[in-house]
Image 1 (spheres, rainbow, N blue to C red):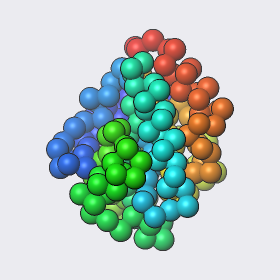
Image 2: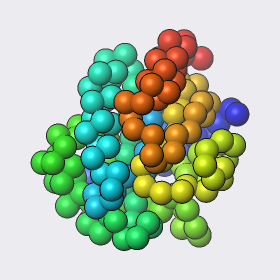
Image 3: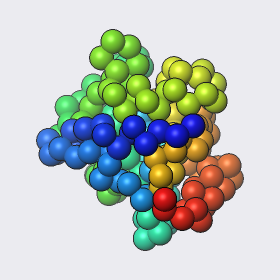
Image 4: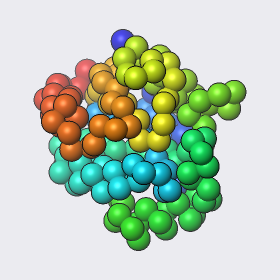
Length: 167
């Protein structure tokens, strides 16, 4: 599924600055909805390890804090950034807190959830669902929240995406 339409989506970052998803053109991007008080929160460490391992080759990990699942991300953007940095040493970019489903769904997730595989295609099931976007904006893979960032299938998909030339 080609999703070059992703590149026109505006993003508000955790520090209040603005970007476009197009700023990541030419880079594989692993987009993950994250939360600080979830059973999967330790995955922050694995996401940071992926970023540290593959950032020099072009991988971007992009986290979007979300409080839609049992209130597991109650903090404001400053508290979230502080928690991520202090607890997991997170250096990958974080977006401002937002919704990944429902009437206020962020436009990025409106596009990502069109990808037809996953536990609930079209619907984010829980925190830490992962979407891999290729260098050309194509959505390449979707991984359930239970799939750890260092799972063989995630590593294989990332390495495959990194091996593909930019369009």
